[in-house]
Image (cartoon, rainbow, N blue to C red; front, side):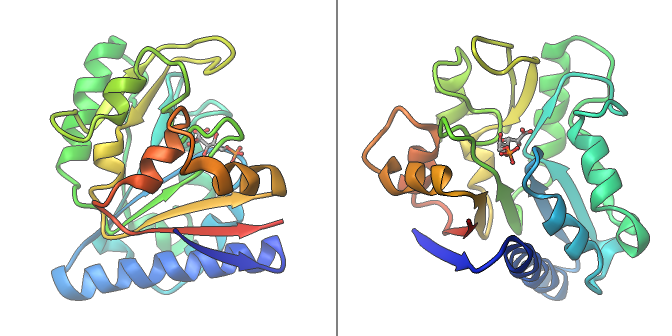
Length: 228
Ligand code: 6PG
């Protein structure tokens, strides 16, 4: 587990954006296309905005979310909206944006459609993953009834339905599975603050934490990007 430490959150955002851009540029140069899965939540927006400013062949790039809340795509908490507004603006608006949840249909149908859509993008060039202080990644959440399927590496779909639960998630969600999140050339875990760093430092000894399984897998290299 390589931890890249930065002196400020501004430097973290710039360093993470440059690392993502490096992977996307390589994919486009080698294969004429590249794909990126990104986390939602409150951490990644500074990285998104700096990535949007980097000169990349955006028409050759496809972006999707690592997970989605099952709310209208224009809702404030929608990751689709977050990616559209904070990343895919300006020249980056020319990228393809794959929606995990269109806002209609049953949640099970939505999971099937998301599984198909994500499977067509694999392998990703970069998976940008966030983590909660409970060690969840994407919407793979401790004690969730969907967690076993979400963490299965063999035979799991690329995306699953995650029901709301106590204490989280408050909203039902779709989540990429560990199999999909690690079907990538590089995983970046973007985290800030000492609480999350402490979780990471002990995670390899705690299989109850979803992040444990990401750090222990050998399908894709993992780099942590962290600042206080
Ligand atoms: C989401 C994310 C989720 C997030 C973590 C960390 O949609 O909420 O994909 O996995 O990365 O919960 O969230 P913060 O960045 O807000 O701490």
